[in-house]
Image (cartoon, rainbow, N blue to C red; front, side, top):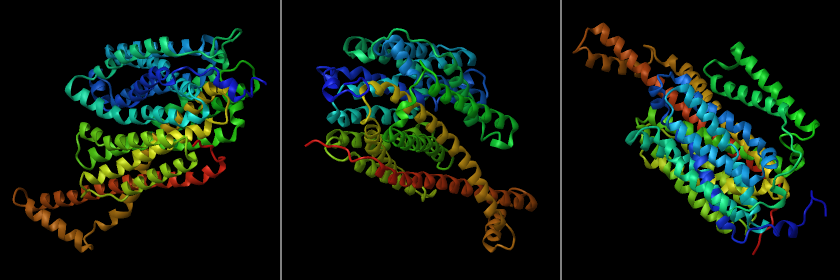
Length: 520
């Protein structure tokens, strides 16, 4: 039997005696890493104030982390061959932990950006390696249960992050959002050293050379792409010359990167996994889902703070029902994922996400807290129900030797999907608000009896404290402010509706998967 097509017996003989014990360090490490991607968001204004930085400058605290992790994520296969997968995994955890400590001790913006680059470089290998290790620790008929547990960390962490970050920032100081990573990282590294097992195909290989060209092209591609997403909306996208140049350089570098990986030997990634139809379709579905996840995490707190008057902590707390729904779904998946067709689970999850998004798309400013909690819980349930089975569907036709490389590529595109979703939703809010403002501003004239009545009523109340002319101008400005608020509300609603439609559009793609095998 060739190495490329190992039998089930060949793969199962490398399974650990106690897979759940071996997965303990994996679950700790992936939870801390994923949570750190969102925990710093709510503390960003505080960090900017500490470093005397502007809002635009402080954004690099986030983007430097994403750039560094994005470069490392597709390189996990190469580093696993160069250092051995277990060694590389432990090094990644330790680098992430040390960098977290240094981030909390940073005294300037330059230091913080540099330490965040180190943190992203250390954490970039954690998720794809964790996913590959979890898949390989269990036989194929039990991987659904394993990935359901893995999904709890991936889904719950970005939801818990803003809540925990807001509480720590309000009650302690922002450095503690990084200091809490240190004990958990040390525990994960020690457990990984003692509990993880290296199968022969994941051990250090001889003759592995550094792909310098691939590294350079990958770096330029992701750096320019991240700048394009971060600054594009503020610069009016392609109306700015420098944005067009940045986007062109990113596209050319990305194309050259994939050509170099396909044509040369000893490269960073192996693109042969894209010949697998299930892997390509599953990755595309996950990219769209990741876009919806990160966009909704970004847009809902903004809606609650700017439109409903919630505090930063309360807006983060509003995400907790989503965590409850996710936990309920992942627990359910742990019991039934290997017993039913996984395609049905993904369909059910996408329907829940789409329905919850549409519910958000019909809210108004006269809502109770329950109107936020119920669709949030439903969206979390859908994420937990769909995210884990789609990972299984995309990976179950790959061999164990392909897992590490495939996980790296898949998480790279999911990372890009999250960046796309966050940038698109910012553009949606800006452009939709302008459209609705343009459509409504014509109603603000004296020929509209409703507008005239409201202006006269407000002006009459204000005329007791100022001159009639000033009172009239203040009343008109008040009505215009109401119009702006209504246009912004519609922009939020339109964005949520687009999320819902995107989820329903994904459902027919699941027909392209083969029916997954289930066990009694």
